[in-house]
Image 1 (tube, rainbow, N blue to C red):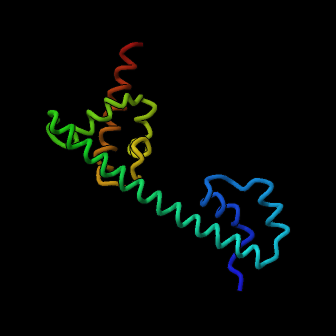
Image 2: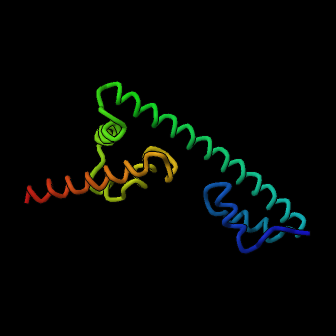
Image 3: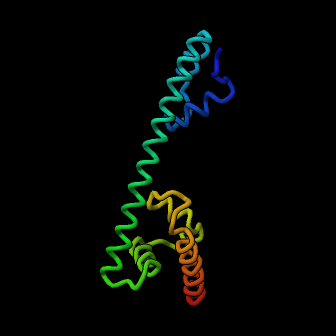
Length: 141
């Protein structure tokens, strides 16, 4: 029994290799027997699993690093986690445009998972910064 799917092989390829298949892949795929396609499919599944595991490990390291940055910032004088995060974001030089994307952009910037323990603080700070920066921008007009 074959489990490969002609309709989503391009998606699986992208998931495992980070980009859509080149023309040479399609040439090989189209000339392959069902058994060969299954072998290609199984290899892509293995690669996708490996990439997912690597991403998970990378995100875990990013969470650890961000937590250390917060603690170091508190040690430097920030009164609490929220203040430390605020200082860290200031240091990164985010713009109004960046802050408008909220917690998602900040998570992306620091390679954090989008759902993380600081999400609520990140969103609050981003909204505050948007208001602040709009006021500053309007004051110059």
